[in-house]
Length: 99
Image (tube, rainbow, N blue to C red; front, side, top):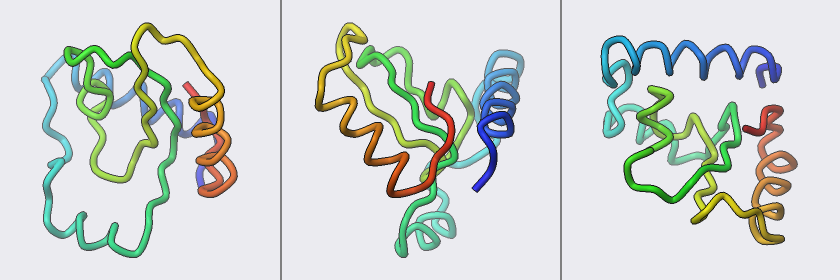
């Protein structure tokens, strides 16, 4: 697993790509990647974001399937269930960055 700083840099790089070029570095439906994920996931970052359909986290950070553990909630109000999801991902996958 990568460090929190490395994960943050990956998110920043992906967002720069999105802002400058639009999404597209990683195909969200790549069949090879889907096959790799059958055995499990190893997201490098946990993202708590808004449910707003205009802000799809994987696209905004130019990441693919399995890269991010995303919790979306209306109004960005954190309830115990969202905290539980964050704790689950951190413990189960060893993910070190929460945004």
